[in-house]
Length: 436
Image (cartoon, rainbow, N blue to C red):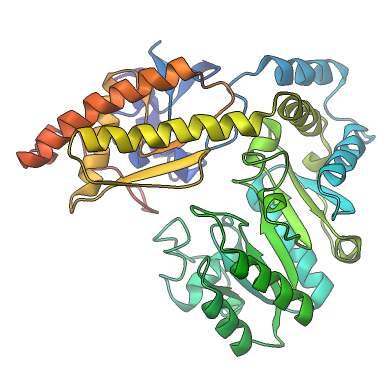
C-alpha cells in the first residue's frame, strides 16, 4: 500500500465521506489502488505522495484546470497579489475589473456578483431569481450542486435526480417543507417542458438549465424555453459552470444566440483558484439587494486576480479552439481503438468534455479494468477526458496508444469472461454511495 492509500484510509476514519468532493473519491475510479493525494502538479502531470508521475488524461482538477496545472501566467499574477495582500478591510479593485470584463464578453448582462464555488453561486442565482419573481417553484434540468433548493427534488421521489448526472443522491437533511419546490425536466424534450410548465403555471418563477450538456441543444428546445419564460415572467438561469469557456470565450450559450436572465460561472474561469460569478440583467440582479447575500471570503483578492489572468490568456491564445481540437482527437481515438479491437463503446459529450461507455452488461467492471490498466501505464484515466490547454498532441498520441493496448486486453477479457478476475480491487462506484 502506497502513502496515498495509507493516508486515505486514515482520512476515512476522521473525514466523513473521505474527501470534500464526491468526484475525487478514489472509489469513483479504482478502489484501494487509485493514488488519492498529490505532492505536486504541473501542466498535465501529477506526482503522488510516493513520487510516481502520472499524465492526467481524466478530469484535470474536475474541469477546473482549463489551462493546465500550475500555469505560469496565472500563478505569477496570483503570487503578486499575495505579496500585496489577499484580504483587507477594504475591497479588491479587481472585482470591478472582472465584472466589466464579464459584461463585455456577455453584452446582454449588466451586473455581476461573486462567490467562490459553483454550487454556492447556483444557490445565489436561485435566491436572486426567487426574490425577483416572488415565486418558489424551480424547474431545472442537469446537475447544479448540493444545496437544499436542488436536492429538494428528491423529496418527492428519491430517483428524481438520477438522470441529472449523479444517481442515488439522498435528500436527508433537506427540510420536508421544500417538497415540490424543485421539479426536473429532461434536456432537449420540448414537449415535456411545456407540459410541466402548463401543470405548474402561475407558480414557477425560475428555470435553471445548462445551456449545453452531453449533446448540443435542439434550437427549438432552447428557443422555446426562452420564449415561454419571457412570456410568463420567469427568470431563466443558464448554468455555465462546466461548459463555460470551453466552446468560446465565455458562456456556451453565446453560440446559440439565446440569452438568459442570469448566467453562472465557476470551474475553468480561474484555472483552479476558487472563484465563481453570477452575471445578469440589471432588473433581476438588483433584487440581490433586497435579500441577504453576503460572505467574507467572497471579497478576497486571489480569485478575481486568477480569473482575470485566466480569461486574458484564454482570449490571447484562443484556448477554446485548442480544447475543441484536443477533445475531438481523443474522441476519434477512442472510437478508432474500439473498432480495431472489436469493442462496443458509445462515445458522447461535447468535444472538450468527452465521455465513452462500454456497451456490455458488466460495463462497470470493464471501466474499472480500463482505469487499472491505464494507471499501471502511468495515466490517470477513466471513461472521460476533460481537455486542457496544456495537453499536447504528443501526450494525446501517447495516451491513445495506451488506450489501444488497454482496449485489446479488455476485448480479450470480455471474450474469456475474465474481466472481473483481472481486477486487483473492488468495482468502481457509479453514483452517490455512503462509505463505511
